[in-house]
Amino acid sequence: MVNEKAQEAVQKSLDGVTGDKSTGVAGIVFVAIDKEGKQIAASASGKTGLNNRGPMTMDTVFWIASCTKLLATMACLQAVEQGKLKLDDHKQVYELCPELEKVKVLEEGGKLVDKKTEITLRMLLSHTSGFGYEFFNPKLRDYGRPAGYDVFHADVKEIFRMPLVNQPGETWEYGIGIDWAGILLKRATGVKLNDWIQEHIMQPLGLENINMFPTAAMKKELAFMHQRWPGSKEAEERDHVYREPLLAETEHEKDHVFHSGGAGAYAKPAEYVQVLAALLNDGKSPITGKQILKKETVDLMWENQVPKMPDFARQGIPAAKPEQTNPAPELYPQEGNPPQGWGLSFMITQEAGATGRGKNTAWWAGIANLFWWCDREKGVAGMIASQVMPFGDAHVMGQWGACEAAVYSALGKEMEIRTK
Image (tube, rainbow, N blue to C red; front, top):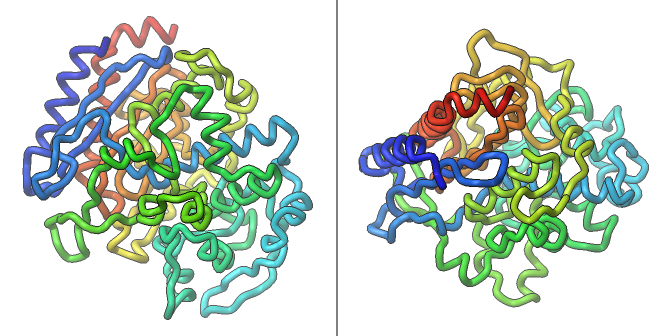
């Protein structure tokens, strides 16, 4: 049973945004769960599209974009547990992906130079390998022109074409590293990334609606994509940002679609949070009882990989492609500016947050304004999902904070007792 206080507060908050046409947010789904995998709050608000589409429901399917990175990382770490991949062996990386041995570093002015440090799987999973994204990095964006780069084209050639934008290990920058990690997994095991995720994560968790190739049933429930164009405050429906997997029907067609570990999955939020439930329980599903990762592996995911970069999240991310992202001066502002951490595929708020989240809470996002969090200290996790571009939509982000806070507030003393 949901927590009635949390449910009421979340629903009222979401309806206030989706019911106001001026926000341009057609619909939102929010779901939060406890350590047992039971829903604390589960609310769908508004419609699947601005053009008088059907109602948003808990069965609505979203392109989850970079929320895929958690799934791809878990897949790679399963392969590490099985001895098929190694976190810190650059020689294995180069044996499997000789392209990474040869990749150059792009300097200002368009000059390519040799890299000084070797690339490891750990670097790829922690965004310290030197890769970037063209929509966040003006240098990379400009270098790719006149043809340009488009990581959402679902073609592996886009990944192969991109140079590094930093020397490996020198700094943190968000980029295509986890796409490369998925390629490593495929070459090490002979299993394509989505196939691995289905067999080793989704099936043990009993989840049928998280997939890089949405089933016919999932496509019927797909939310429409929206856009707030640069210079306009109004949003409108637009063609889908990530189209190719939606159009691939036959196995032959699917063979030509890249299994993107960085952005390739579609999901129902209520199922995605069951992946988070397994992480709340040290890798074991509280629903099916299946262990998908060892406890020590989950602990490793939560280790700060950038301890020498306590302000990495305050360096700012420019809107190199403003139709895809708003500028972000800081990833997760916190009072007092405490040190920020980055684990294997996600950010860690090392100090407790204003919403009520505990210390060392993991969180990350998808470019179409989806956000998840996983609080192992307090045993709470959740997700808010929309389909609106560009990233950093103030209305959706405001609801993420408000709904997350409503969950912790409603739990109140029950939470204090649980964490003692």
